[in-house]
Image (cartoon, rainbow, N blue to C red):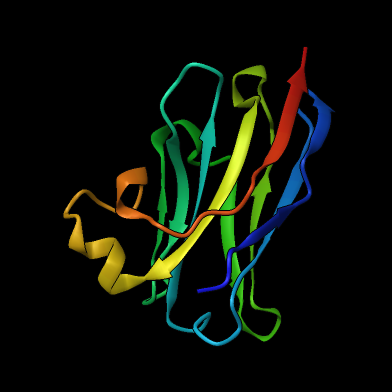
Length: 129
């Protein structure tokens, strides 16, 4: 399985916006689940948003109404649009892409990092006051 590649991170002031991109394997993209996670130093990796193979979207409560996940099958890319960013959104953001079979096998849910095996290298998001 091809490792997903993230891009689009950067620095922004509070209230600003960023769009992250995750490019994954074209061979399996149409049926893969894809999710975004974030991790702050010393903390556990936290689920942010996911889109499953039925195109259902899942969000962490902390980002509902501010973040939006979307999938472009033609480009084999998943986007995370992040609006009204807050300093607490500062973290390394990771993309994960796996089959629904793999994600469901853990019974921990799509926003639990233990459900995923195939990870990107991450992209840093920094939000300043």
